[in-house]
Amino acid sequence: MTTSDGRVVGTTTVVHSGPPSRRWNLVLLGDGFREEELGDYAAAVQRFVDRLFATAPFDELRAAVNVHRVDVVSTDSGADDPVACGGTGAAPRTYFDASFCTGGIQRLLVVDDVTALTVAGDAVPQWNMILVVVNSTVYGGSGGGVAVYSLAGGAEEIAVHEMGHTAFGLADEYEYFAGCGVDTDRDRHPGFEPAEPNVTTDADPATLKWRDLVHPGTPLPTTRNADCRQCDPQPNPLPPETVGAYEGARYYHCGAYRPQFDCKMRARDRRSAPCADGVSARPSPPISRRFPWPPRSP
Amino acid sequence: MAVRLIFAYEGGDLRLVSRQRVDMVTPPTVAPAGPAAGGGVWAELRDVRGQVLERRAVPEFPRPNVEVFGPAPAPSVSRAPVERPSGAFAVLLPEVAGADHVALLAAPEPTGPATEAGEARELLRVDLAGS
Image (cartoon, rainbow over all chains, first blue to last red; front, side):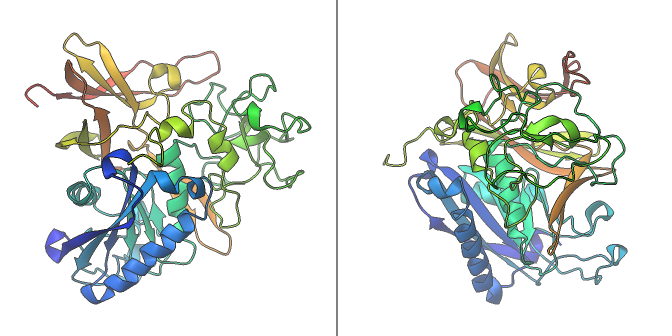
């Protein structure tokens, strides 16, 4: 349940593109892995790295990114799984104290953030983002100062989504809060212009944030929600990765627009487009400023 | 060089956990910050007269709700309220000559297109003197 329930073994740089002081550094930590399971942890990290660098825009940023794996041994396997949420009641002794059922939400898997931040800071002082891989096949994860995901199938997509927030400052593109058909107060965005680069209240072709990426033949707005009391049920009228201004974003049915019909900031689905166009569309700060060091630098 | 501040929060309590000098380039903030950027939480690096030297958004600071992910075969993401948020986050700032303190500030989002974010409220101040 605490750091007395394990130990930090060491750090391995899985992807080395340059000196940490000149690169964007992703640090992965593992929780609920016993010593004999560290191989499983290393394999899980490699699967995530492969997944990450197969996903735009990270596929084009490999030369700007270092990935570090910190091996941490826990006394027991797994994560707390309280019966209050229908779990098994398991309460393994793990270094970062991973637990499902946070706030009464079964899938909300969190760890001790302070411990994670401290361990990452000791291992890689130049870290830019921290992900914790939890040794459980129960689906779960969370975002925030430290992102967490489990080994359940598809859960690594949580980490990709969270990297959109942390690495690129992207907003959520889904057009509801609690869910479609659930919300009653999400009809129309208040109207102020969001700071995030991938959502806007302005779909004017002359001033749209990502207008330079919109094909001249694409209508703007690209879709309209005919009934702002609910999520827009219409299917995508255009090819999947067409950049436009689709109504419904940032927790509101109407009045806010997203660059693509579907992407990983809207639907955390392996099949979703990666928001690459939305990311690169950002006028400020563009990726070249976000990663100001050239990949070929020493 | 840069300085990384780690903060922990639980409910309404916010405290500084650690401060670390780091040899790294500080990337530009990933989103504009401050009242003109739609509210939110941000950190200001200030000199002794209170002049802002750097400003960074702090999107990781807890909202009263969290993102909840749904599993296959119908993966989804939504938000749910939390009664008592707790956790920790870090703020990375460049080491700037003349820096005196860091202030964490918060302002509510605007309520309409013509309104500005609400008045900024200082959550915590960290004195850098002697660092």
